[in-house]
Length: 438
Image 1 (cartoon, rainbow, N blue to C red):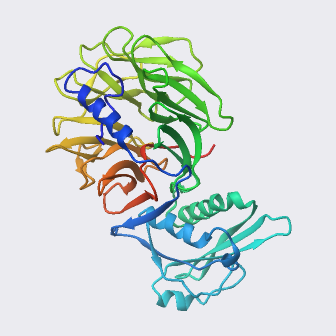
Image 2: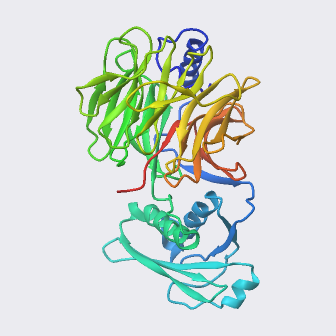
Image 3: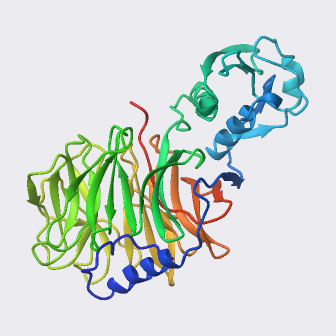
């Protein structure tokens, strides 16, 4: 599979058109996967300043359909901020005061304890408490009464609580991601937990689905569907399953990107001949052209403050990332390292630009510090694609190829800690990380 989202429509001139063909060929050739593929999280690498934490098995967890302590631990490890201390065999719950000296001897700085109890009505009572074992302080806790189907969400919320208490920043574990799979002859758009689990199908189609993009409030997904045998942009309401047409003009309609206000989207249209950037009202209607180049302009993404649009253009002879005012106007080139740079993604804090660069024929995830212009290669894989930042700007999710199969990965911004969300029976691609819940 190539890493190219720039060629999301069939109007690309050489050398971009073959990449689109390769992408579609890879999609069509992919093996099928189970409808609700489960994922396991594999964390690799070691950070320089990880916080050692022990997550004791929750009392009653053996009778729970979800192992809450393990989910919380996997979340925290995947963040790159925490290192797990073995707590197996510990018999503690949220009411017990732990022997902090014992946990200090185990080199833990903090300890989480809890319980899960099945109630008479079939729901589950989940409680936990967090301890600073260095200071011997109770850092607080939470309790939830939820259905079985929400046990994973509760686990992610516990991880969010711990992350925020110990780092001072908001956790991202109860956010959602979207991605695309192919099952037999059908393509599916999925919405899943941030760890890839609990996937729910938002759309299924016999034709390719690409470029899912979350709205700023997390209520909608824009995407490109080929069900009309050409690229057409839709917006899908995640809660109701209803969708509406965003762009179906003559030629190709592709690469949707929401403005931060949620009222407009930037899209790539070829209705006037060449592929150029336009804005379209999120409810249909007003369409306005933004770019006026003789090349191909595509893959727009708004800056977090809505003042600028970053995009990909081959106006200089090869694909590079540019920046222009959100209302259109003169564009400035942003990427100068390498002769092929695509798929820009901006961090929500506005500091970082992630993108894919072709290096000696390999497609690799790169990160630019927009303040200094410093560029870092984050991966040693060769088929990376579709980077997307977590809403706290601390992680990037991307698709890549490992051992000949597509896989979904997350990485810390220094590239030191990566986690693979590995499907048991198939491949996943085109990830987009949703915003914090409103």
